[in-house]
Image (cartoon, rainbow, N blue to C red; front, side):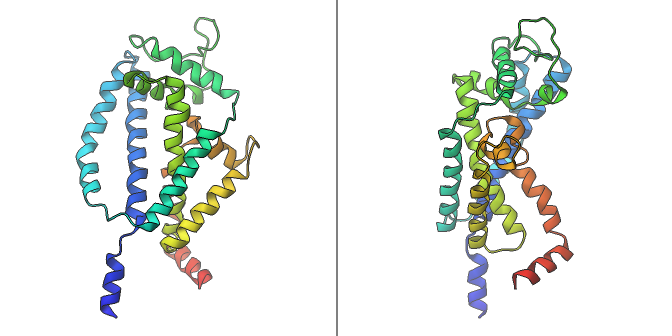
Length: 257
């Protein structure tokens, strides 16, 4: 009996893989956004974003490499989760749901790439009007499109395709991992968490073109930076705090028994 329990404890689990991939995405988001905010507020040239972002990534690299070396062996459960992640990424690659916000968000990003020596634009760049204010503070503070365009420029890639097809697909692939970790946080086994992640993705896809629906906002339009935070690490951390409460876990296990 003790031997069986020890083997069960040693059994590799996709939890660490899922958390590691989520944290890699979170690290890039923190580095890119922190550098963006500093450059935006200080009015430094946009090209300074590269150096500031690199400082954060280099500082975190040793710890992430140590975690990567300690990851458990890849098993069939992680393979199933990886297939689901690829499916979520394919949803972004194979669907087209243009939105009116795309014009204002992406135009500002593309305009910034052509002016790296100047500060990040405070105003709305989509019209030929000097010093036109931003549509909202939210439009100004959203960093996903601008930082994605800056990254694409440095990599020699087309900015628009990099943002909408590349970075957004990576974000979509993280969505099943977040829901998997959320169900695991509730105390369910890995197999049940995988089923829960499949059900969550299916539920999100039901939204189709309903613009304000949660699924449409968080997965089907994930190329918009505003849709990312509610989906990945924020989902795990926010809801996970509730699920970690002792009273809630006792109630949940009582319901599952």
